Image 1 (cartoon, rainbow over the protein chains, first blue to last red):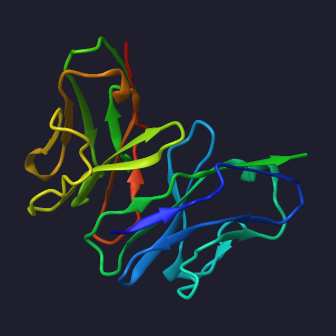
Image 2 (spheres, rainbow over the protein chains, first blue to last red):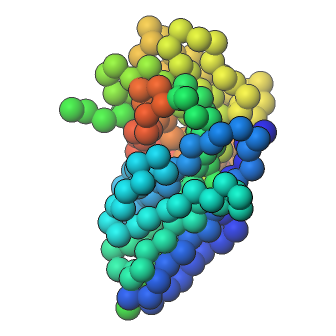
Image 3 (spheres, one colour):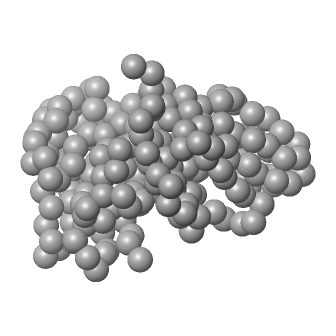
Length: 110
Length: 112
């Protein structure tokens, strides 16, 4: 069965410091990985997906199949990055359910 | 256009009562999901509808939970004989197959 692990429930960093939100997955096939974000009082929304290989709001994530990881990184945290971040996985090819991790609350302090 | 709409936004019910939660997906989206969001539990998958295929009900926690999707559009999640542990935010999401999910604002269910 597919599984997503986010080991940190809460991550607190200072503004301007680098951020790394960890995500590990277990799946025997070829997965597609996503990061979703939920800002305070807003609905959950897509941040980025690994097949796009793009940087969104300064965040990047690289799929490491050897380590089965998809960590989310940003070199310099901003106050507006404070939010709940969820890593998610699905099967390649579409039409399959999305499995989420338990989420990491990022708090950026001034 | 309109996003995913869920109603009610808040529901308080007494233990043992039945509740119905409604989801209006984005028009044209063939995939529809229900998730449950609890403190410390992340997003728990409940059920997944894709077009005319049989739904994936593998996440429903007990037979008190059921969901249907009428006409490939609106979906209703029903919880019978509610228990206090059912208290959570119930999220609905829709998408095209393989595309990113669009979430609703959720229904906050409180069972007293």
